[in-house]
Image 1: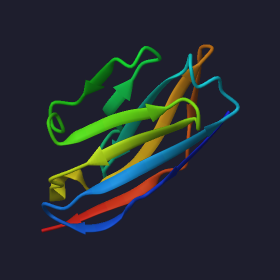
Image 2 (image 1 turned 135 degrees about the vertical axis):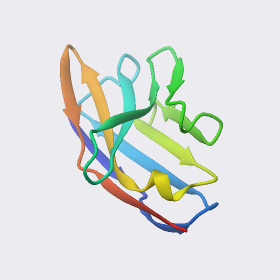
Image 3 (image 1 turned 60 degrees about the vertical axis):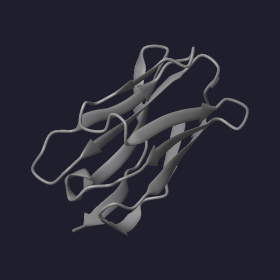
Length: 114
């Protein structure tokens, strides 16, 4: 299983970014995916998740601003981030738990300037 995240960058507060995660080696129809983030000196935290049936969950801090989606055909997972805040600055990681094993992609840096 491999996960490749992309789409990070530098954006001003109030702006938007769309992260993309390309998954390989998985049956995307049965895998659940999540986006996590880790800010300097902080623990890694769950930002959003999407189950195989499409059920979505969000951290309270991003509810209403971020949206997770999936494309099972192309085995991609997206995180649309709107109204970004400096507190959203972190390295963002794509994650899947597949047949009981956790898999992480390399992170993509998101920096929000005030």
